[in-house]
Image 1 (cartoon, one colour):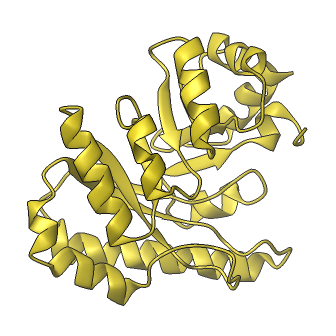
Image 2 (cartoon, rainbow, N blue to C red):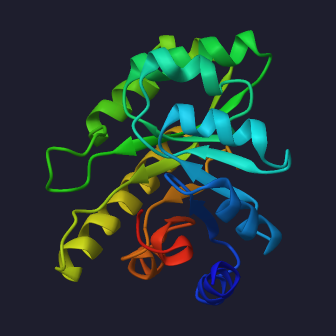
Length: 220
């Protein structure tokens, strides 16, 4: 069913939107099935699981770290990670820069905004991001590239609320783009939307959706 699920989801996503197959907790055989169906971008939320899968699976997979990332674990994924979605503190960004430099790499990152009405979600406010991007210290981080923003909507059946939260993230993206990245073509990612709400997210400007259960089935 994975191939059929991918084909269906791909048919509902515009060409300019990247599909991240969220493969957390899923066995490597299921990832290979998705890979053989043409999927190349996979997202994991646990460092150890990501490291293990990267070692065992095809080398042309683009690995995204989508979960909350602790600074002390950055070094494990720094050699290979393609994009880190959940940068939610300056401390973490500085550690990513440090570990990227050790690996002679530049690591692409998204700034995570807190857009949900849930205290369990992580993320910056717009004011915090403006302060971070304006700081002198930010100018010294030569081994990270800020490519866009990420946010998670409230887990609710209220589609109006979800839509408003996604709309807010798009507005944050626009504000940062015009002020700090107007000349930077790489700042072009709005990562929002998951299995239950990715179509709303796309209608509100998402360029990257993180879909797991609709591809691989319910968690288990």
